[in-house]
Length: 71
Image (cartoon, rainbow, N blue to C red; front, side, top):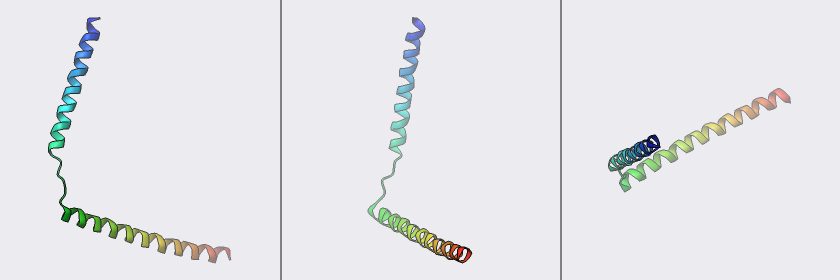
């Protein structure tokens, strides 16, 4: 029975350690400014457009190749 109590105490200690570490990490969080958010959103949109164009060209190419092989 005493082992079970010791395990419970160790579990509580681990939880407190985890919560303390989580609070320390949350103190390091940086909230981006409006300018950073706008700039990074633009970067993401450009990447999406670029990848979409690449996939579109690949789709057209494979479609053309398949039509040549089949027909």
